[in-house]
Length: 187
Image (cartoon, rainbow, N blue to C red; front, side):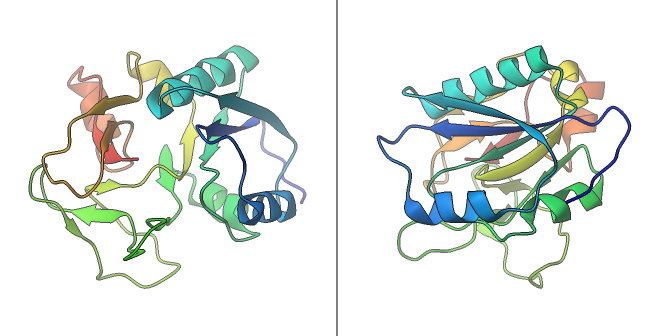
């Protein structure tokens, strides 16, 4: 893949809370189209801590963009290419719950009242109010504008799954403008 962007430096972060990596993840990761990148992995610990340490390392390495991929997912070959083409401060790839009912992790509504988003076509860029963090590409400028910790577990009143604080494509700029530290997405 030939990708030439001035001052572009991709970090790919892999937070791994598992003792192993699923072969489906490995197979999809090794086959992905991607530019040169810095490989950043963190193991052993709470997922929010691993994600924060990955961000710190990406900042230290001077990455312009950070793609975080969870090891319990598999990804299409063109995942990185498609995410980069959107040229957004934060964009998420579609991920699914890894256990029944295997629903997508796209949500609409308000905290405490989220419902699964179903009114979209595969391949479309859609706005959501909350989503999974299993595949997220972030322009590193976002992390400079938000005080750490960038990821933090909080109790989930919806009981859909645990909730994480993190940059979110729809609201991150408004949050920075209001000096808020976090916006909520699921992870």
